[in-house]
Length: 494
Image 1 (cartoon, rainbow, N blue to C red):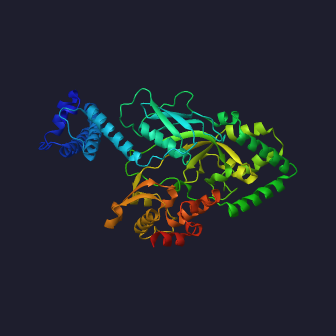
Image 2 (cartoon, rainbow, N blue to C red; image 1 turned 60 degrees about the vertical axis):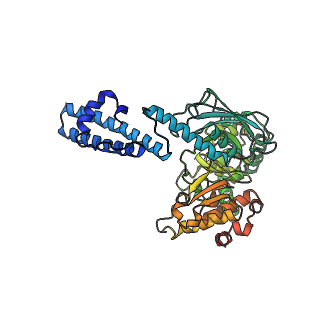
Image 3 (cartoon, rainbow, N blue to C red; image 1 turned 90 degrees about the horizontal axis):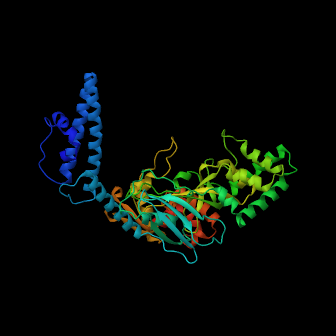
């Protein structure tokens, strides 16, 4: 390990560390990790003791030793990674070479795991091209016309490997999975890109709602027609009547189309078993307003003390008969609505992300059919530990304890989803009965919320059935089973 320490620091390090350090007795990653841990501890101790002396010279030395301790900590993490992945030690290999070798090995694991879950292209779903860069960023664009006019037509993202970039785009556009070609410029080294590394967005790569609106198409035409129709309907209303109209429509929406609460828990399963699986995709598209199923304010038209007047202000502006194009620019372009795309087997649903709660609510209350929005997506991983799945559930209210035996119940429910053919995969370790060691490896997961606690899963199922009538039956779930918590439990565990 000493040869990996900068030469100028070795003498000083020896004076501080070696009197108490055990002599290395064995080769391999295990002993190396232990020696790195010992060195890190001793360096921190020496830095603390020197700092306590208080004079300038020892304070400077303390700072240099602290910095060296951080370098040793990074080395220790690198050695631990090599040990975890069973890499064979190479004599005279410096940390840079080992880091590169480990990154290539981890990238191969990611690609091999994705090979088992990559969705097949759908007929007539179009063709896309991805340009992948060495920093893990990628841009993508559609190669043929979009017959729906909804988009997306292009976008950008990040992923740890080129194959992961293709998977991110394919799973985002599922079930209409296009043919995807990937080019690397310059050719990649085959190494895994770091999850939190800096990625520079190339000039012109971003696509916003301004481009979407400027392109026109059937969605914009339907939206403009709805704006004119709604404006005429509101023209004769007083402020009081307008408030009453919005309140009545909010109550009707809550009864007919309730939102999913706990929206942060429905689009993600939990921490992946292999943390090297990650990805992100950003685009702009026309989203049907009825498919936004979760916002930060789960009662339609009610915002508490967070600018509760905004919906009425937007409706009042529409009542004045504005130019439909100018109104649309103000609604969608000047400050973009941001939505998160949540995958489902029949098609996606959406939750409000960083911005746009008031405008989404108001569009739903006024019956505007489309939202031009910036949309984000993060793909699911191929596998999760059972505890990670359970930890993804919403935290109960303070006066409600965690349910007793929830891990055991979830294991039975997940096994039932596989047995019923809803989820295609295997629950590894199920025969042992040791729930904390179980791992779900899913080749096909129709929607992430199916793995949630029954009460949340059936609420999501009911909302999805409303968005896509008949969806539950088409994957073999009777509607009365998929929308009732106890029926869901019984069906999956008997």
